[in-house]
Amino acid sequence: MNIEQVREYTLSLPRVTEDQAFGDDILNFRLEGKIFVCLWLGGGKYGLI
Image: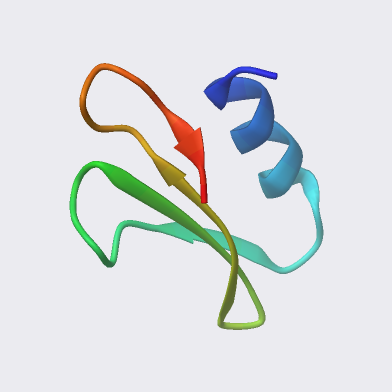
């Protein structure tokens, strides 16, 4: 999966929100306020944390 596919999938789930609480290079996906996926976008690579 690429980043857009992960993002689309996680945002398709009910009550999921996206934010960047740890900086511009990390996407956080939260379910009812709790982080369940972090995507690191920095360094020319990406990773699932």
